Length: 283
Image 1 (tube, rainbow, N blue to C red):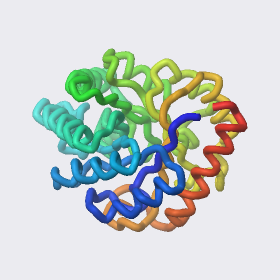
Image 2 (cartoon, rainbow, N blue to C red):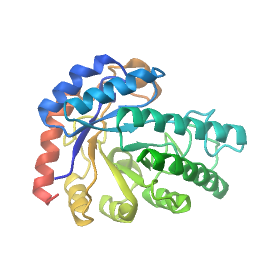
Image 3 (cartoon, rainbow, N blue to C red):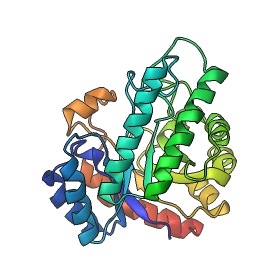
């Protein structure tokens, strides 16, 4: 069975000791790992929380985003350099956490648009930054897995076809791709086809309901999804990413205006759901 993780953004985007009881309960439920948002400036907290996770037997993955003033596809070379510096800083913090995977839409700046379709030069700029980031990540033993987002949150990579095109340009063994079922629900025609398309470079997988609530409670085609993962012999993480308004600042930044599910319902019911689906489809 694949390792199952849970993203603590359901509670908080901060890196603090307030996460410790959450980690304890996730471990009790049966999770193999936990995913943290890398953004807090408190460097010491990353080592402290990462060491605690390791102590209780939880592995770690990480996620982050880039802002408009640190955009890998900006025509401004200074802006692009800032994006690389931010990615390297994130790799350092993920290393402090003990993470081996960093996911997120850092091929470009989050929710930053030009009122035009993606241009070839933008893919080239992104690939150049990500290749350099891959070189840096390799020194820390970390895999970078950029994420395709829906059209309301980015424009460079909405689909697995676009993401695969970019990753091929990056051409680095430490840069692969991730798949998120929430975004795919909006952008892909068929889950099975899109999973097979990205299979050769798939490095991370987010289990996320169409409304970001408890997995299995909405209309994502889960049987098709898990069957496709079994067909491609996917061996990576299955990490639940669900959002709430527990952290208002983070919720406001991503347009979460109502509660989809209570965090512990996501964690407890979601874990059971993934186990059941994995067993059903032979993962």
